[in-house]
Length: 129
Image 1 (cartoon, helix red, strand yellow):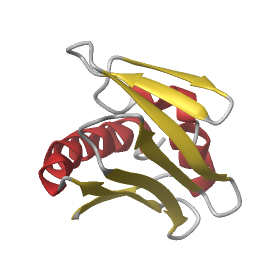
Image 2 (spheres, helix red, strand yellow):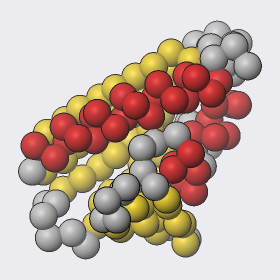
Image 3 (cartoon, helix red, strand yellow):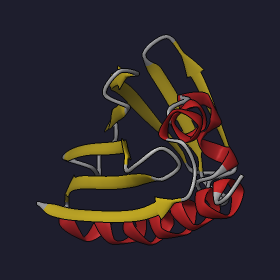
């Protein structure tokens, strides 16, 4: 099982960052994908090359500020769990963590790279705003 975790400290209130990062339908606004669609507890994301992944939304906990999802119905992916947490660190700073557990483990590496890019974009969008 491949496990990756990326994080960023963001100079902004955790509730404000969570209202954006914790919205499953807004992933394409900060994560390097081209689009996403949400219906109930399902989400479909489309990569720049046109590949579509179906996901089950596992957890969307606004009190805990945690979002979890699983890629499903994919013959190549045996297991996947992605987690995004936003943790307050004072009044105007928070820690945003993006982690993934994946089998086959080699597929966790591109997600780690994408997560790094996504978290950098969140910092640019919210730092000191």
